[in-house]
Image 1 (tube, rainbow, N blue to C red):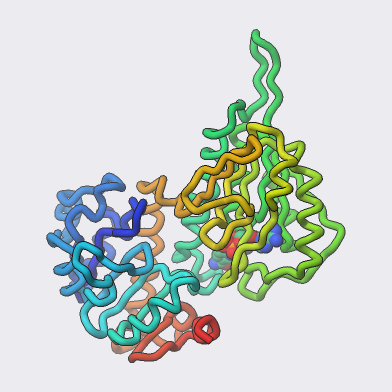
Image 2 (image 1 turned 90 degrees about the vertical axis):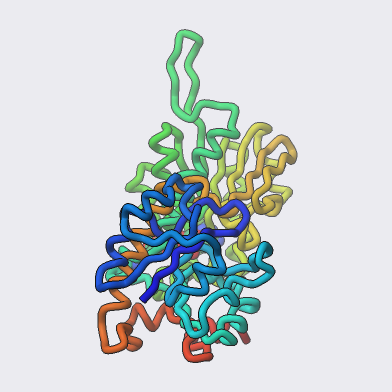
Length: 381
Ligand code: NAD
């Protein structure tokens, strides 16, 4: 098979799906890897390194997509305005696509994938089971995002994070509030702690309290409890009453915090609003909010994707696709996840794919001109 690694064309995207060091995993079993020229440039992985690693560098997107049996990419396919064609329409008929496919893109992309008879594997639907952890791109990118969000907060804040005892006086540590303590939130807590902040955090899934406390942060208790964990490890949408109380609890903390990182998400649904415009007014001037859920509507009412909003003296950074601001390690982690996934998917039964396998079944979205994933069928209704 020919495996194609295109250059990502989404605005602001700097990552590449597979780095040179991982090419040898894909070229085993006589597969050939095609890399679009310049695909790794922005992540500091250059054409010559891909060639040395055994890949063939091809000039443009038309050639790359047109020759590949499998396309492995980071971002969901989009229109290639230079070529006047959608990336899906550049693919070979009945080729295989392995990429991100967020639920918000389904209505537009699924009909195109069906029309071209593409077999699609979407990273968002990888089952969250122990066996699949080493393939989990979402976790990898959340790790990057949680880390970088705290650095962005520190950059915008006019204060030191740690306690400093200097000849010019003692400076107390800042207080950071992390909302949502999944993969990104836990990484944000760990990073803020490493920088010396006092950290507080909240997540409605009960199992998370212990994880927050084990990182040395204070868990913010909520009087009301709701059964919010799905069997897949995600949070379910909470009731209006729960969210109202959560906002009250957060509002009580906001006058005392310097930096807030919000990471709260509900898979396939808009992100819950945790900080309203009125609540922003409660913060001290000079405080910072970094909203990692902004692409799904945002946890802070004032956050805008990719923008830095200044309101009531507070800086609100809408951290859309923040993982691409750390392209070297983000690409490295993605490559490792994809290499593990590739070896897993394309080694089992006769035609190379065991369609009854739990991981394959979970992330397979379209095949033979049909939507085969039940969760995706629901999103299209
Ligand atoms: P996510 O990105 O979908 O959501 C981020 C966090 O937001 C979650 O912890 C969620 O509980 C929280 N949240 C939702 N509503 C909230 C609200 N109103 N207020 C505050 N927080 C809210 O989730 P994620 O980080 O990708 O994963 C969640 C969990 O899934 C992880 O903590 C982990 O336990 C599990 N997981 C398992 C695997 C695996 O086993 N392979 C892989 C990844 C994650």
